Amino acid sequence: MRITKHTIHTQKDGSIDLNISTHFPDKEVEIVVIINEKPSFNFSDLIGKLRWKGDPLKMQKKLRDEWQ
Image (cartoon, rainbow, N blue to C red; front, side):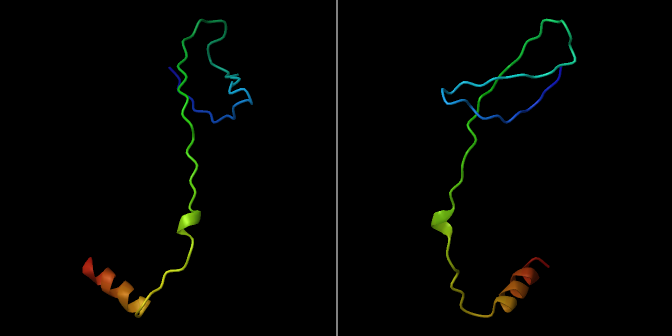
């Protein structure tokens, strides 16, 4: 058994063309195809600046000391 993973782009009609080489010449083989849409992430609503009050270095040291 051999497991391979390929990322391919669908055609305009939604179809895909598979051409996968195997180590089984002139044999009958069974394949399993799982189609999973790749998620696209949009972080545009998170863009901005953090308004920080206080000394960031002191806060970093305080947080680090909590682990000791």
